[in-house]
Image (cartoon, rainbow, N blue to C red; front, top):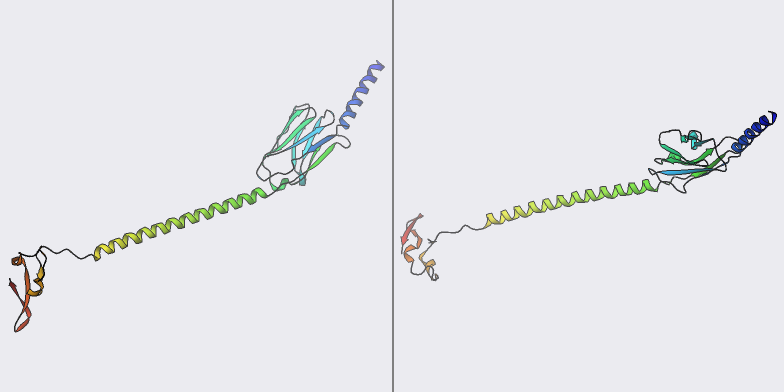
Length: 214
């Protein structure tokens, strides 16, 4: 009976020692970018019972419990148990507040490990540059369209102006100021003098004209 108690006590002591010596090792990605997913990995030298993740400025992340074979739910994070010595913490969307020291802690002395998470803001700058380029392209396109519309309106009005400036066509019957204007007519008018009219001033009254048919 005494030997059985001693054996049970020994097993408990060994288990507690293993838990105490279950030193984690946490690794962070080299560089993370705003708005993207980041994965932290925590390994332990022996079987763990509980692992608690935490971040900079007191950020509380999920806790993984070996007996439950699962991790607690915390908004913005996704933790999972891979096996008895391996867990992972996923940060769903990186932001500047995630920059700093992250920790994976297990019960016992020296039962924690930390790593530095670096958030690079290049993605935000690239997005800002891309937005600026898009805005410039839209403005340039609008200006080009406006110029084209103005040119079309100008050409249409100029064409209409030329049409109004063209002289009106006269009928086949020609009118001349004097009989001398008939001389030198082309074949188109020769032989048709009867259709030709010319005007001569009436003597004594220059305000009227006498129409004479040749």
